[in-house]
Image (cartoon, rainbow, N blue to C red; front, side, top):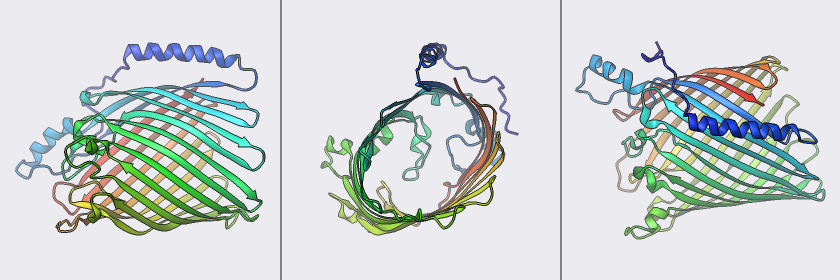
Length: 419
């Protein structure tokens, strides 16, 4: 039932293929001459994915259209196959007690029916894990990525039903000082720049600066207790450059949280992160909010082959809409893993979430959404450098508003090879 009419697989552009193949040949030769270990590891990923509702369009869009007409129209307009090719390099080099790691990937995605969505992607990441003496260590890193943003709904309009390439630049530095066998101080400073290609969503371009500090208590039992304070500042350049009184959406978020990691036994551990969150808008105080968030994670290794993970959460999240400034999210996630053998693994993921919109003062908004995501995947490692996987899944959103609910069935096939 999932097979499209055209069985021809889309082809990767020859120019990109030639360029990346040449790069892989050169780096493979370089890695062969590394004196100790492998300095550079070329790799390749090939995936073929099916989506029954690629653009996350509502199940019912026009009540005046008959069911037969809708099915005939949507059969080709909704479903599609995507061929995704990624070629890249992984770098790892140790200099004394310092470790340099990098990852660089170029990719191309081609759709069989929705050819307007075809795009080239890139990803680059470099991290230096540094250490001074026996008690001070940290990381310094930069990353850059450009890929297609997921389809979403803003103000009831599907703005990103068109292709939107999103670029993210991230820079960070963190460090920790273990000044006592049982105590450690940590700090992080990071900056994220996010920009969108599509004009209709450029209002969400932002610059974000995050500062956080941690105090950890590390007893000999393996459990830990940490106190975290964080401030995140966000600016929206589009509004600064417009005539609409600068900084309309500029905001800051302050958090103070407690993190408890409880190593109950060698097979069972729990982690609770809870605390107070406050968001303030510089020029729109009616959007301000504060409240309690918490996340509870658990992991149980039932046997050498069977493992279960579970997550529960309650979170207040900011929403960038004219009628809504806040969303309350309650969720449950279950992640079972079955290591059938040394070469075969079965993974599952079930996600249930309820989102309730909190309207702006004076706005009459009653929006409640239930989100369901389920995935089952099988991974096979026939060779030490080759990994093959297949997965099936379903995404579903049920809304109390008309013409907003949708569902999407997924199939994925993937191969990963390291040279």
